[in-house]
Image 1 (tube, one colour):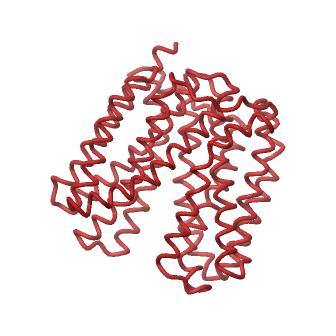
Image 2 (cartoon, rainbow, N blue to C red):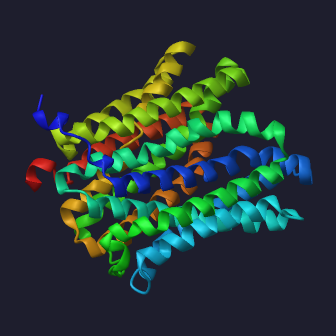
Image 3 (cartoon, rainbow, N blue to C red):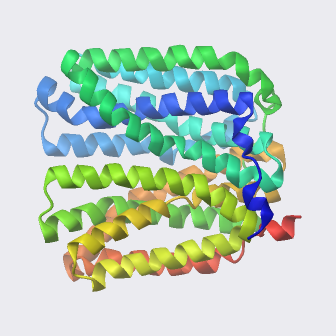
Length: 387
């Protein structure tokens, strides 16, 4: 195997460690509201099922509008955007915790999700700026692995702390910690020269069409997977809530490992080959849910797919090969919006297919999209072509 696979990981530099600590903290805050909002809404406001669904629809709006960041970066620096974003996340959690009515909860959810939707492209922009071209997938993979790691951390945190306090107090404390950590991390962003420069506004580029398309396809795959796979296992095999929770937690572990390994694999085999192999396996997995009738095997397929759920590392690193530093934030923001648009569209389309073709419908759609992803990924410039 290529010796590059064993090169030291670049994420261990002090400034990147601070960024990682920050990203981990705000990911914990974002995941905590998602984990607690069901009980909070029921206990405090006696909400109905449709009200929760409306709330999550509202929570998706910031992701759809993230492309607006691609135009704002020409007016204000990434440093200012970073500060505003973590203040929004912390304030959103506090607003939810201190809310006096359900409409105020909506406002808090919008606030924190706008902050998180902005943080993602800004943090990725910092990673791309601080990475050598060939090391960008490794750095991005290490950063993004902190999201599922944060999910694992929140499980015992919630289980331990919630019995000691109310959900309101827990949300208030989480929001306050998010702001404090953000303020502590802010001085270290001085190491990121890009933070103090204005970026160029987003411009659609025909040569980046594979990047936009793969973000849409990744969002489609994510939405179909999250919406229908667990539901299918519960619906067809009667999984109990304890088993389901255990599968989801194991999925986070596999997802974290996948993010950590995808970068070194790209260094060894190149962008296009890794994507093609991953999408080929994804197509096989989606078809497996149609053809295999064995519960334990299907659970294993869920975990394998969680392991492969890391292709955004490769598509984002593609920008390092094709864009100047001033264009990173705008293009990353566009990618996020396209991803969320697919996430908004695919559950509806998948549900229609399920209604007409049973569970075969959404899984066949997932397999078809994975095959299309293989074809689109061939249009990406490989790591070997960049050197």
